[in-house]
Length: 111
Image 1 (cartoon, rainbow, N blue to C red):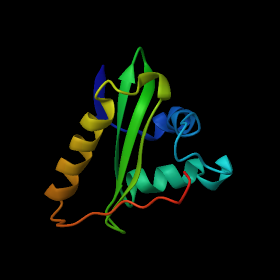
Image 2: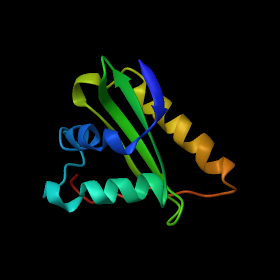
Image 3: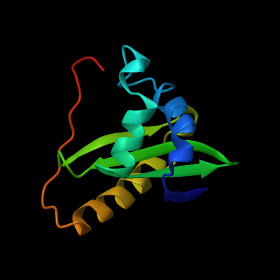
Image 4: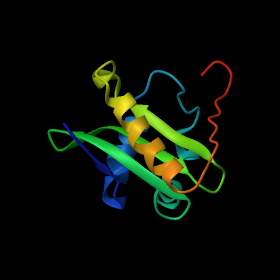
């Protein structure tokens, strides 16, 4: 298991994880484009991935512009293994080291 900063070359695998989740599913996968992922990872904030056997199994992305967690998703086959907690810690350590003092996370009803 490897944790590292997300790269733009990870986006295709990030999208696979994002669209495989059982909770907080997108009603339309086209709502989050590859360009959106790239912007949030490189312009607005930063992302991290967990890699197992050369495959992204989880990712987290923080948004400095809106002071929020833009994404934190784990492939359902890898849930309950501490991956989400580790990604969250990496993301929040970096986020608060940027001089931020608050963060928020939003979601929609019934997701």
